[in-house]
Length: 510
Image 1 (cartoon, rainbow, N blue to C red):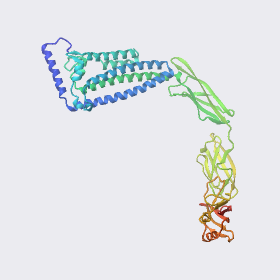
Image 2: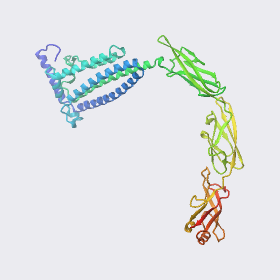
Image 3: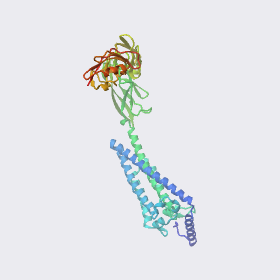
Image 4: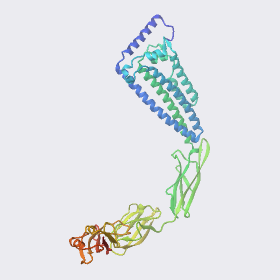
């Protein structure tokens, strides 16, 4: 166990020390065992999260490699080698944890206070003062992992710090204890330690391996990012103040790179404009109506080389509007007594810069208005629009005002004309009025009507139902008699407006 030949006295001291450590482990406070268990839980949670994170980063690196190849592909190849080496070593350590917990009852898997024995790993890893075959296998697995990491990472400078961390974390040389005595690597880490302490130690080793894998993939992605930031991978973009311009209006905008910053400045620019603070500021006069092209070229210097970047864009020139678009959503006239929805706009001008006014006109949000015309036969709608160059365009349109057409009398809800049915049904009828083929939703009230039963005098009724006199007259009617409802008086609900004469409705008694 010691680095050199020991005297009998020294051997006895060492033996007593080991016995003391063993006794200390056997009598270790339950709180300490629980602390090791909680530590192991945190390591295992971190390892699971690291596995998922590393898989996600690996997928991102593979996508970059598939898209661009080159340096991306080389970096992905390195990362995959590290991924394979890490998985093999991680799984081996998982088997070692299984050795440590062998014989533990399922119900005791989280009862860390009973995991105080060291027998499992002591019997598996050690024989006397040397290693058992399983112990030698652990050392071999560690050495193989380090060798495979070295083979994968090579001598690339950006990976050197990661490789140094791996070698430091898994240095299998003898370790000096607090007494200065050399102790074999596995003895130092596992011999005589409680079961849960050894499990936590193995989980920590797994975490070290996952961290190294994560660092390698991050470094590989970092190199990919550097490659992606190369000027040769930029795309020049034409950014105009707007995409459509009125004839004669100034066209303004700029041409920038996809990832523009203060340090990304072209050395020269060819095109309709000039360089200002690393941007090409465009200034020209819009030509004829239709689509117009903007093109040119940037040049950059990278690693002493001149890199050209061509750009191309386009804009549309539209005629300067001189008339507004004004339309009624329902028809080309407006009706007195109802709210007439209207849409008012100006070609090429945002609705927020369009104003309309007329007697009875309200609203305006998003170009939507309501017209409630008053007296008269016409209403004039005036429209003004503020153009992008600050100028104002004006227009107007005249709409005819019409009264709501006369309704038609109806029985049994919406039945018109001559309706047939038994006399008993007629006595309980409600007289209604409807507007046939009218595009507006309106509510009508019948406030009176005349009823004429054959052989009986005409009876004037108030309201919309038969009164006592009307019912008495109906009682005298016979089969085949046609009862006429005429002079139906109708008004708009919620309005004092009386509608034109309502067409009569008839009821033939069966």
